[in-house]
Image 1: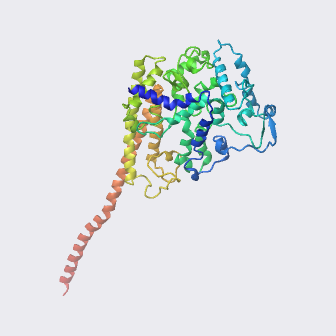
Image 2: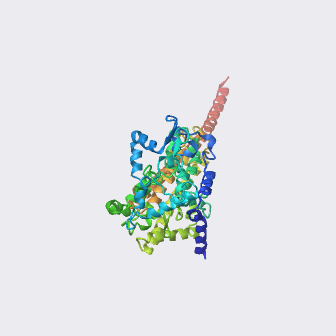
Image 3: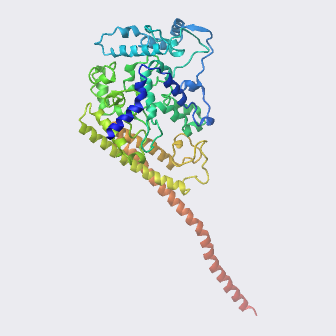
Length: 523
């Protein structure tokens, strides 16, 4: 019964991905713009700097005024061949510039599926009135993306735009709808807000993060934008101007963002047995094959990021969150609810994925092992959290009563908070807080990511469990020192009063005795 209910909910949530096939994308595009956060709810705390026009073109991009007047399709190519030859070279070798070659592909070619995709795009454009009935696209040129589909000329200094997700969605309706469907994900106990975490709301997560909005160093803060812009554009995965599907199917396409201290998926993948097979055999793999045919026509002998994360019960789409369980940050709210049917169904969906290469028993056993390993790390982190919170509540952190500046608005002060990884002033954060921030944001997540990406060194020793215990040890050691210091200071406050009392009694007695002796000796 529950399985049928889940299937129904999945259909409802994924419905836009299917309903928009061959349909008018305008309602989807309108909703995209209505839902887009722009500067977000913390807008009053920050102002965009020039580079951000490229990460959020919807809100910040303005055409350059260096070139004025009306330009046509041929002029775009001729001019940019001279000034930005790399752009033109990438485009000329792309599917966009070679549509006739796609139409001529024999059905035996692994890329033949693109003929159907192209026919869908053309049918969508006909329905939108952007392509005459019975006509074929000659190419997808500069103006189609930077001015509007089907336009022959634009005013360079007025009409030029940087394509956003909706611009790509005008042609690629199916993929756009699938990606937008990620926004419908709802966690059963509200562990995350609706739609989180996903590429479809990553810009919102960025601009509505309090320390990102509060930082004075905007050039540093925009480093977050360089990954958290997938909600705005598609070129994070499909690099402009080639927009190659084959490139986007390779793990390196994910590496720019999915690396480093708090989400080191790429490193864990490469250093796993899966990654070893990929690196040693990828020359024989055909990345032109669609993901659904990767193991047959593509010749894959191990999974890639895309093969695992785009798949759900045998279907491959641009909705990547239908199997999400732990998300990006293990928490007790997730760990305590893993027996809930919502989580169980998603675990079984992972078993189906892993069973493309492994036995279901192995897959289920490893997933349960990874769950338990993550819970073990979470237990260590939570114990340290309680210690740091108690030090803060009792005012025992170094400098807490004398040299603890408030963090920048709208950030609220808290011990070991996320803001303390990106801001420091005086004794905020104190050493023990910084250690704890590293512990929950880096060590625990590395442990969890290493476990689920099957990188033994990554979770056992090098990056996960061992650093987690190192930081735990330092926190406990520092807590013991701070409490001993506080206890000694409290004792010292009492010592002067006691000492003066002890001295006054014998001194008074001596003076009394001496006075009586002097009196008695007087004649």
